[in-house]
Length: 177
Length: 349
Picture 1 (cartoon, chains in turn cyan, blue):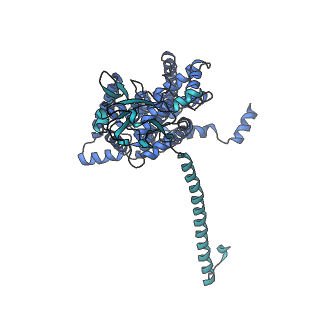
Picture 2 (picture 1 turned 45 degrees about the vertical axis):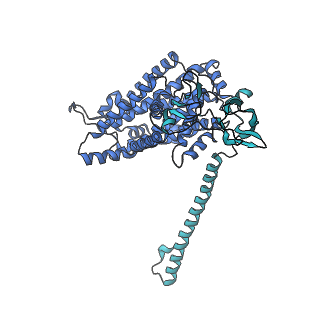
Picture 3 (picture 1 turned 90 degrees about the vertical axis):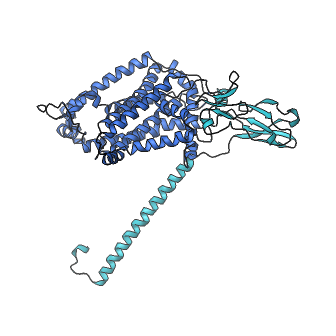
């Protein structure tokens, strides 16, 4: 159509400019729509892959503070099967007077075990070692000064509570298998 | 017969001559020696992995309750299951070894230099994708090593600044290994990573075809001989011979040293002696030697340097005027790599 025109007046120039603008605007709207649409889908996909839900832990009753004397400890088994040593370090009635050592190595999450002959907790993954109070003595945890992690404790209405995991993926699997 | 030929030719309008033209790139004569043909080896082994992997997927069940038992079924009950699993396991081992050897050949012959820098970067992506596939693969068995390997790897990624925790959450589908973790490893291992590898290999080979195979300066060159030979059939036959040798080797390994099963995963006990697969011995030893932060940051730094090596090499040569500087750096790095691997292999802790 426009190829056949031999002369262009101001009206045609205006129409061409308008057409050009509309073309660009339409392309822009189309591109924007596509980016927004697929972008939204990508965001939904990313959000979908990101896990939701609270951590599987709960506060559990351990004992009354008077059951433990200073320097004494007791073995506590969490619902997940994890064995926890709860010890009393102070004479007070605060949660800070008690400790509950986790057996999870603070380095990379392996399970430490007590080596009676060496009087230490040892992590077989990267040779980390801890004393009886959970302080790091050897390996990467000592370099980075990471003590054994402790389970949160609280005293409520005169009772000692511990926050522990409820499930372990392997013990669950065993129960169902 | 002729009618079928005509029918096909009409529907697929490519002649034999055209096909010959398309595939027949000139191959430099140094590729007559098999150790220069290691690039095709991982590709061949990848096909073996796809074939055996699809078969294993018929029985494998990716959930904590069922995974270990389904692998036991494959290994002990399914007909030829032990052999197919053995092929898959040894195929992975050889594939990783072949990728490393291929990369070393490219490195020591400086084939990554201009204009092939981007193909080196794609090769690095392929190396990482292959290692990740290996890692997610042994995580699927749900033996002790699978569980603790995954836990350690997720916590390593947690130590990466800024994005580490997000990566850990995405990998494990939570703060720690849970009931939804194993299906992620399975999807990564059997869909996401293989698809990525196929795409990357496609681009890798396309770039090789566009640039041509890099020439190698030969000290003992016999200039009477032609400098190039045909891809088809000469080079194809070399690759087929390598494929045959690999199949014999794989079958022998799968039979003599079959894939076994360790104790079932136990989230409450880390075994007294635990090691990852051999290709992670280096990083495992590295983690024992240094603090977590240093080990993670230095690994990231080394990986970044490897990705950027074509440009680092260019800068080093300009700065020092020493053409072979990368070769000597490579020799030191190789000794370090082999040394740390052997060290980890021979000690219990």
